[in-house]
Length: 120
Image 1 (cartoon, rainbow, N blue to C red):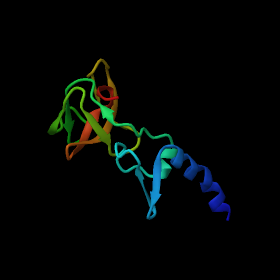
Image 2: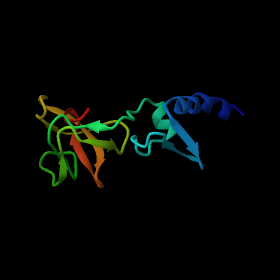
Image 3: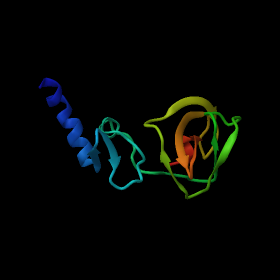
């Protein structure tokens, strides 16, 4: 009973964020958020799509020297695959100097890393 009471605010927060609980998992009502769980949504994860500030290469790993898997064009919207950011190799892109924050996204079936400074 105690565990159920502790989860009540998490479930209420997920419902307020527009998530639907179904079959033990969650999905976004709008479909734009990808597959975030209720716990991630309640933890304050970004559920809006990532929008590119400028053309940016999607990389295999979080470094500018990594293999480019594709391009996220300026203005295009991608989905976040994971909650939060990964601190990795530093870059000076999209108006930032010596930033090391990367986002793991999916765009048209391509999953990879983009500099966080290049997406909203």
